[in-house]
Length: 173
Ligand code: NI
Image (cartoon, rainbow, N blue to C red; front, side, top):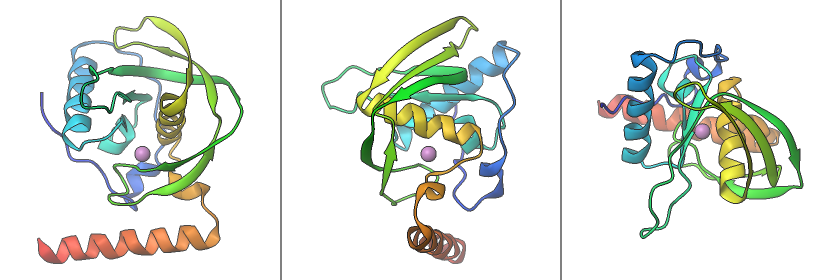
C-alpha cells in the first residue's frame, strides 16, 4: 500500500469525468488500498479516484469519525444515485481544497446503487454524514467540485484563496 499525492484545486485533472470501471483485477485492488491509506493519512472522510488523477468511477468513504468508533470503510465502484430526498446544509471540507470549509446544500437522504471492490452490485440508503459524503464524492466522478455550488462571490473568494495558497506552496518548495 502507498500514500498517493492528492490533487489540489485548481488542478484541471479534477475536472475530468471518470470512465466506468470494468476490470476488478489486482490493479483496482491496489488502487482501493492506496486510496484508503491516502484518505486515512490525510485524514478525510471520503476520497474519489479523480482526486488522485485517475479518471475512473470509484470513491471510498468512512464516516466513522469518533475516536472510539471502529472504521467503516465503504467502497463505491460505478455508483449511481437513484434518488434523493429532503435537504440538509453542512459545513463541508474537501481534500482537494485544503483548509477550506463551505456550507453546501444537498439531499438529506439518498439511495445509491454501486458495485463493491469485487464487482458485486449493492444498494444502500444513506442519511446523515454518509449521505453528504456520498453526494460529495459522486460529484468528483463527474468532475464537479464543491466550489461549483457556491454563489458568485463565494466562488471568487475560494478560488482566490486556493490560488494564493498554491503559489505560497510553490515558493516554499
Ligand atoms: Ni472532495
